[in-house]
Every structure is written in structure tokens, then in C-alpha cells.
Image (spheres, rainbow, N blue to C red):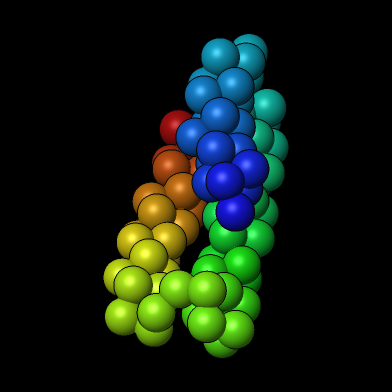
Length: 80
């Protein structure tokens, strides 16, 4: 879970440092994939009792919000 969580901002930063919108969009896609991994891992952790359902819900809402931001950022790259 830590690796997936760290991967999200790391890929955003790496993509931002690259030359060109297409490369940035590619790294945003990788970040979004890592976010999806984290979402799944939280769901599993909740189901098997590693974290309580209330905390899982809070985290999943945050993940959903970050996902929307990533999608919006990726769309904005293609609109400019």
C-alpha cells in the first residue's frame, strides 16, 4: 500500500518534469493506475479486517477525489 501511495505523486512529479504534454499525460495515467491499486488494496484490507470500515470509507472518498483531479488534469492537457 505504501508503494502504491508513494507512486501517485512520484509519477505526477516525474511527468511534470518531462518534455511535452503527451509524456505528462502518460505519467498521469501511471499515477491513476497506482491510485486504482491503492483503492483495491484498501478494499481488501477492510474486508479482511486490517482496517476498520469507517477509516476505509474515508480513504476511498479521498482516493475518488484525487482520481477526479487526475482525470481533470489529463483532460486539461489535451484541451490546450
